[in-house]
Length: 258
Image (cartoon, rainbow, N blue to C red):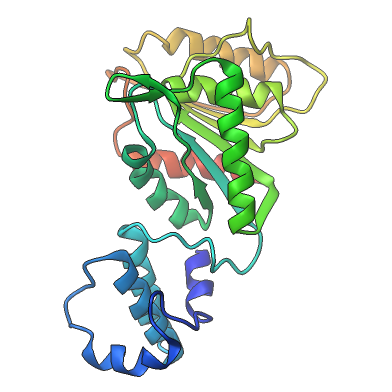
């Protein structure tokens, strides 16, 4: 895990001067920190004291609480751009992906659609969604050193459909696509043989009306030379798979594989 490497070089606290480290260590409560910043600060204290194991544990706690490590990466990191479904928001969609991205040592970008839909938003026409994805990538580049060869666009439902289209229209930009209950529209972004394709991880419920579409997409991608991981979950409808963190992590590991 990249988190273990980061732990031993943290040198400053968030929201506190470095010379307060000793005082923070003396006054820190024995209970686990209740917020991400306190957990990160505790990791800094342990790292400065040479307590690698404790630092890694505190960093893990910080990740669980939502801390973003974009300023502490030691080397170019993969980037995951995660797109919510219709009616979703970035705030509601981020926590699950944040935990998985942290496990993989990846930077996470979670943009938000701009067209109102239900209690949230959707991605609008292809050009609107594409602009938001590319803007999210640029913002991630400004905050962290990104491994340009390992950018993954992922999504659920409408967000997954946008991810499909985005990657097939610009295949050289992305290492992989993770589609959860998405729809592949071959009229908008046909699969073309003879060109480099990203890897595709396609997750779908057997009872989802898009399951047949996803099977056809997998066949077309494989016929064009693409590498595809297709998972159809028995009895599942339009939803994330059971044990979603494990399934997303497995899919992303496939996509980021050299």
